Image (cartoon, rainbow, N blue to C red):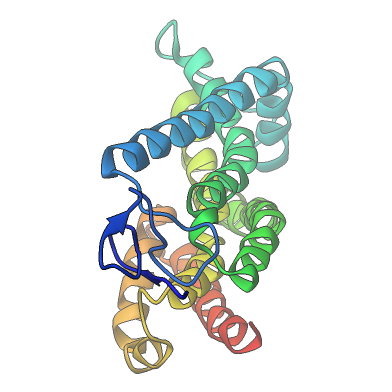
Length: 260
């Protein structure tokens, strides 16, 4: 005899319900479980991401001093001495630089843990999409850091901050300078996740593709606000450059939606 499935279990031909788990969708293996179980699993998976972030900082810390000297030599000048205004400023500056490396390995891990968390409720084509997102997330983060390092930072340091000529002698704080560098590098790496987030939102039904197309003006306004935060430049040259890159990323996201 045939049997039917309900929200609470399997209904036998005599009308009685048996079992405590059931299929909540047409996905094989997707069963209903208590909300506390899902929250506990989500907490554990986010804890794994935080562990990866912490390990990334530890692994990068021994090399952070050389990285700081390289950045100082590349964008500022060896004639300008690093100035530390507090005993812990040097350590904090190194930790901020390590955060860029830690985010590079933690963000793909975040997508992977989300995949494991929602894996039972995904269709095969959705699982394949998630597995493509993980390496793409790492590559986009690296690409964003490269754009920030080779395009935005030179504009800020070489052509803006030191355009004062011989009128004044620059004296820069180590922590403030490296904070600006890490904000741009990490910010660009995170912002370059935009295509994946937009495609993910559309694929999961969180927003409609046509809605994104119709709300371009609103999206561009948000992009300008984000660019002002990422690029502290009084001449607005860096902000315009950042906004242009974000617009390109958004339009690339719409293209990816059609391809996927």
